[in-house]
Amino acid sequence: IPVDNFDLVIFGGTGDLARRKILPGLFRRFISGQMPEEARIIGAARSDMSVDDYRVMIRDAVHEFDPASAKHKDCLERFLGQLGYVAVDAMGEGGWKELHAEMRENTVRAFYFSVAPSLFGAIAERLKSFGLADDQSRIVVEKPFGKDLETAKKLNRSLSEHFDESQIYRIDHYLGKETVQNLMAVRFGNMLFEPLWNSQYVDHIQITVAETVGVGGRGSYYDTSGAMRDMVQNHLMQLLCLIAMEPPAKFDPDAVRDEKLKVIRALDPVEPHHIVRGQYAASEKTPSYRADVENARSFTESFIAMRCQISNWRWAGTPFYLRTGKRMKARTSEIAVVFKDAPHSIFGPEAGYHRNVLSIRLQPNEGMTLGVTIKEPGPGGMRLVDVPLDMTFAEALGPDAEEVPDAYERLIMDVIRGNQTLFMRGDEVEAAWRWTDPIIEGWQRRNDVPKEYDTGSTGPDDALMLMHRDGRRWREIK
Ligand code: NAD
Image 1: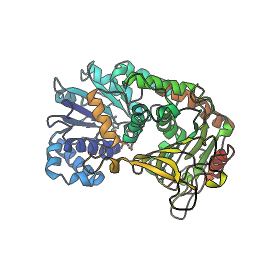
Image 2 (image 1 turned 120 degrees about the vertical axis):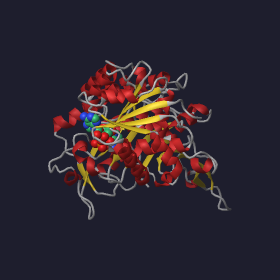
Image 3 (image 1 turned 90 degrees about the vertical axis):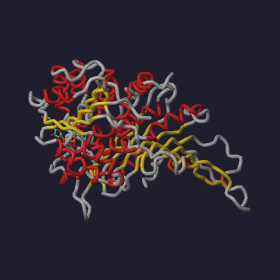
Image 4 (image 1 turned 135 degrees about the vertical axis):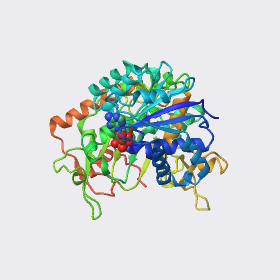
C-alpha cells in the first residue's frame, strides 16, 4: 500500500549511513511501489554539489550497497529523478532559504537527522526559525542518543523546545527488524505462549548479539563508547523490553512504549560480579582492539556479558543474560527463551530429557525455532530427542511472499505513516541511561580492566563462568 506523498529531507545525505542504508532502502520501497512516484527526497549536507552530482553519488551508492536492486535500471533512473540536493550549513545560515524553496505544500514533511548528535539542536532550531517545519512535520534522529543520562536529557530538551514528542522519531533499527515485530505477534497473537511467559515456566532468557567485525573505521567514536553504550543501552535493552513487557492493551505507540518503560524501570542495578567485560586480542590476520582504536591504554570494552534481573511479579527469579561483542565466532543475533524442565520424568532418567527453547533469530535467517521433545523414531524403546519446530519466515511464507524489508526501509515508511510504535520515546531512552550510568561509573571508579579474548571466540572465559556459576550455559554462537 503506497504511503502518502512526502518530502523527506536527509541532513547528512552524503554521509555513510545515507548512502549505505537510507537511500538504498528508500529505493527498494520505490521498486515495491510503496514510495509514491511524486514523493521527493532532498539530500542536505555540507558539501557544495549540484543535484546531478548528488544523483550520480546515490546511483553509485545503490550499485555498491544493493547491487540486486540496482538491476532495476529504469526504476533507478526514475527514483534518482525524485532526488534533490541543497548544500546546508547546520550550524550557520547558509542554504536554509534554498531548502525552504524546495519544500511543497500539502505533503508530509519529514526531516532525517543523519548527522552527528551535536548538530541535532541546531538543525531543530533552524527548521523552525526558517519556517521549514510545522506542527505536522516529523523529525527522525539517529543513535547515539546521548552518552549518559545528562547528555540524553540535554538532547531531549533541545529537540522538545521546537518539536512535540509526537513528532520525534528516535531510530533503533533493531525495532525495524521483521523478527522483532514477529516477537510481538507470536506473544500476543497466540494463546499458546503467553500463559507460559513468566518465571513459573521460564528458567532464563538469553539475548546474544555477536558480530565478527572489529570496530573498523569507527575506532575514535567507539573507544569513547564501548559495547555498553553502543549496543546494550539501546539495542539489547529494546529486545529485552519486548520480551519482558506486559501485554499492552492496544498495539498503539504509547501503549507499547508505556509497557517497555515499566520493564526498564523494574530492572535491578547490576552487581559488578554479574558483568564481564572483554577486549579482543590480535589474531594472525587482524589487529587487537587497542591497535584498532590506536589507544594502547584503552579500557573500553568490545564485549560484554551480564546477568540482569527484572524485579516484578512476572519475572522475579528468572535471570536475563545479555551478551554482545565484536570479532566473535559468528555473526548471530538471537533471543532464546529457555523453559524449565518438565516437572516429572515418566520415561525414566535414561530416556534423555531436553528443555524447550524458543529461539528468535534476528540474523542470519530471520525466524523462530521451538525445540520440542519427541520420541526418537525406531524400535529402540522410549528414547527422547529434541527436534526443531522451525519457522524460518522466508520458507514458511513461501516464494510468493513479499521480500522481508530491511529495518531502515520499514521504519522510514512508518515515519511517513506517522506511526511511532517502533521508535523510542524520550523517557524510555532516559530510563535506559539511568540504569546504565551507575554501571559505567562503577567501572571508572574501580579502574576496571576488560579481559582479553581471542578473535573468533565466544568472548572471555569469565563470560562462560557467569553462566556456569548458575548451573546454566550459553547457547552456541553459529
Ligand atoms: P558521516 O560522517 O559519514 O556523514 C556525516 C554527514 O553530515 C555528511 O553528509 C556531512 O556533510 C554532514 N554534515 C556534517 N557537518 C555538517 C554541517 N555543519 N552542516 C550540514 N551537514 C553536515 O556520518 P554517518 O556515518 O553517515 O552517520 C550519521 C549519523 O548516523 C551519526 O549520528 C551516526 O552516529 C549515526 N549512525 C551511523 C551509522 C552508520 O552505519 N554509519 C549507524 C548508526 C547510526
